[in-house]
Amino acid sequence: LPSPIGGSRASISLVHLYMSRFVRSALRHTRRAGSRGRCTTVAVDTSGLLGRRAGPHHHHQHAGLLRELASRIRFRGPLTVAEYMGLALTHPEHGYYMRRDAFGRAGDFTTSPEVCQAFGELVGVWCVAAWEALGRPARVRLAEAGPGRGTLMADLLRASAAFPAFREAVCGVHLLEVSPFNRASQRSALEPLVAAGQLHWHAAVSELPQEPVLLVAHEFLDALPVHQFVRTRVGWREKLVDLRAGGE
Image 1 (cartoon, rainbow, N blue to C red):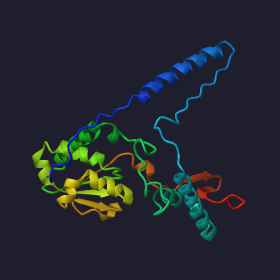
Image 2: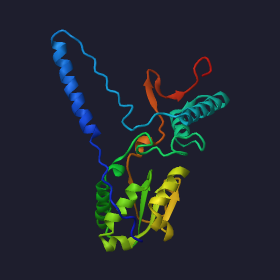
Image 3: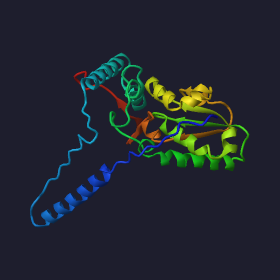
Image 4: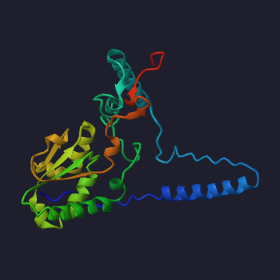
């Protein structure tokens, strides 16, 4: 495989450290005040941490999704939680991940690979160790589920480049991604692999080649649609999403 993108990121933020210290101090003050018979309420406004407020396009997106959900429920009845989550996250037009960058300062959250490259580099070293534990197969595929912007995979490949035998065994990189927007970001982050014809996208695990695969995923399972069940006096029942009595 060609060597991936180089470079360094040093964007580690101390916001959470300062915030946690402030909250601990405020709670200590609250406990002391309470012991003297007074009650103190502490409110922390975090809305400006990312310097972003919801714009009109967000409200439009939510309104379109709500209309879609309501239409489906009226047509065929209540949705399972898995169906509801699937539409909310990956609906082709209104899905959360489908047409926007959800990560970083312009998005809603950030993940460890976007904060410090050391995270992905350590995962790369782990992949080498896992490959050796498998008996050093002559061919192995690298795959990532929910690869975001492609940052983790780029850092992983950079670190694993220090192990020539492993890099020679890697015969392809596969990304499990359904978002066209994210695929474009991944294409940019992993351009050398694209040029070499070594980068492949898939919509499901079942599409991966039938060869040894090292599969990594970070903050992925928490975004998978799931079925929810509750135990009642008459047995297990699946939780469904329905409209209110007024049709909303």
